[in-house]
Image (cartoon, rainbow, N blue to C red; front, side, top):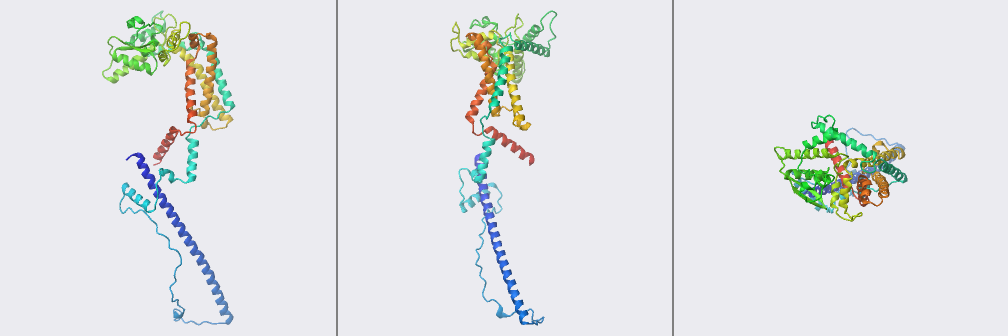
Length: 496
C-alpha cells in the first residue's frame, strides 16, 4: 500500500469520525432541548399547583372547614378520584445514534470495512481531497493565509534607503577594487595576497617535514622545491615538447592547459583519473587532449587508500604550484582561479588585432598573472561589499524597523537582503567595468586583466537567484514546508 493511499484511508476514517462527532453533538443538543422543555413544563405545573393549593387553603379558611383524619384513613384512596385513562405522551422520541461496532475486531482493515459501511448507511461522499473536507471554510481560509504568509516565496519590499545603502556599499567595494587591486602583480592587495600565499606554502611544507631553506637560499623557492619532490604527479608537463608537440604549451600556461591543475572539482576529477590511468588531460583549441604518460602507481593497498593518496598528491602538488615554480625568477605562473580553465572551451569570437578566439584570450590573460593569487586579491573588495551590505541591513532592521535581534539575522533567503546584495555587487561591477573599459583602451586582454572576475561571478549568482525569486513569487516554498514539518515531527517525538 502506498503512502498516499494510506493517508487517504486515514483521512476518510477521520471524516467518518467527524460525522459521528457532529451527529453525537446534535443528539446531545436534542437531549438538552428536551430537558429544557421538560424543565419549563415542570415549572409551569409547579406554579399551577401552587395556585391551586393557595385557592384551596383560602376556601378552607373562609368556610372554617375542619378536617379530622384518623391515622388509619390517611392511606385510603378514593377510587372515584383515580384517573381511568392512560396519559399519552405527545413528544417526539429521540432518534437512535448510529455507531461503528467492531465486535471484537481490532485490526485496521476491519475498522476500515466498518468505516465504509457507516459511510454507505449515512450517505457520506468522499471527495477528491478528503483532507480539505475535514476543514471548515474558516479553517481553510486560515490555512491558506498561513501558507501564503509563512511558506510562500515573497518578493522584495525594499525602500529607497535600502537601495541607497546597497549602492553606497557597492561603490565602496568598487573604489577599493580600482585603487588597490588593479593589474595582476601591481596592486597593493595583490602584493598582500602574494605574501600570504608564500607564507601558506612555507607553512604547508613545514607540516610535511620541510626543515627550512639552506643558507643563502630563498625560503619560498626551497619550500616549493621540497613540495615538488614530495608530491610528484604524472601530468606535470611543462611545454609542448613533453607532449610530443601535439599542441603549443609553455611553462607560462601549462597550469591552465592541464585540467588537473585546476583547484576545483574539475581538477580533482582529472587528477584522480590521470593518476589511475597513467594519462594526462589538457585543453587546447576548445577540445580535450589525452596524453599517455609513463606508468604511475599510487601508494595504498586498496582502492580507498589509493584514492586518498591521489587526493593528497593533488592537494600537495597544487601547493607546490600556487606560488609559482621553484625555478621562476619573478612572480611565476601560479594555478588558475577555480573553474577559470573551463573558459578555454569557449573557442568562439574574434578579438583584437590578431582576431583571436575568447579561449586564446583567456590563456593569454592567465599568462600575465591572472591566477589564484590575484583572484584572492579580487575577492577582498567583493567580501567587503558583501559584509558592509549585511551589516547595514542588520543595523537598519534593528534600529530603524525596531525588530528583535532574532529577526535581524542576515540570512541570504531574505528577499530584501538578497535584493540589496544584488544592488551592491551590481554597483561594484559597474565601477569595475567602467574602469576596465576606460583603462584598457579597447584591448580585450587589458580589459580582462582589469576586470574583477570574482565580482562578476558573485553578481551573476545573485542575478540568477533574483530571477528565480521573481519567477517563484507567490508560489509554495517546498523547502520551507519540509523544514517546518521536520521541526514539528521532532517536537512530537521529543514530547512523546
